[in-house]
Image (tube, rainbow, N blue to C red; front, side, top):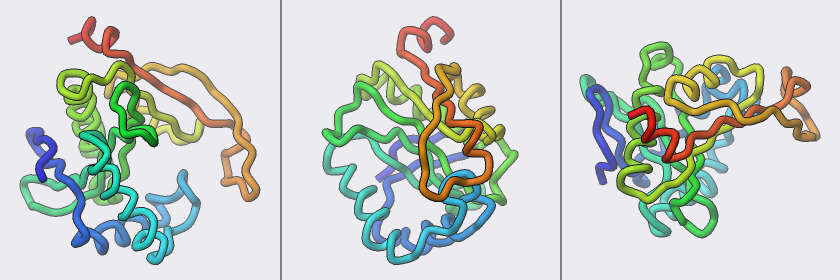
Length: 183
């Protein structure tokens, strides 16, 4: 079930037993501020979110992993290299969502860098990309510290836009060649 370890984190596969961890994570309005703007309903986590995470493991080696703080053995969130629908690993979307108590400690960057390294060295990944709201400065900093570079700003229409949506979404990316040149 272990995907990888860093100095301070263990990234492992999710299991059905992680339901409460995901509910707790997605119930914090601070965590959801730039995502949905409100907590994810428990039924959605139970019937859609967790089953989708578990199903990705059946498609291939990429996916979303529970982030466990090694010192305390506590669940602090997740790090992901999400595959496209077909489960391929050529191009993966980097993601991270941590509990507020874990913010500002470098865990997202540490986990992101380790996941990117594994993608490029073991999974055959050619490109890693990520996106967030343009106004989500902390997330943008993680992308930059993990080595991704700004690609573009784009606008998406939403029926019920979050504050800051008018500034658009940003995409960052890193290719294996760019990564190797800096290693």
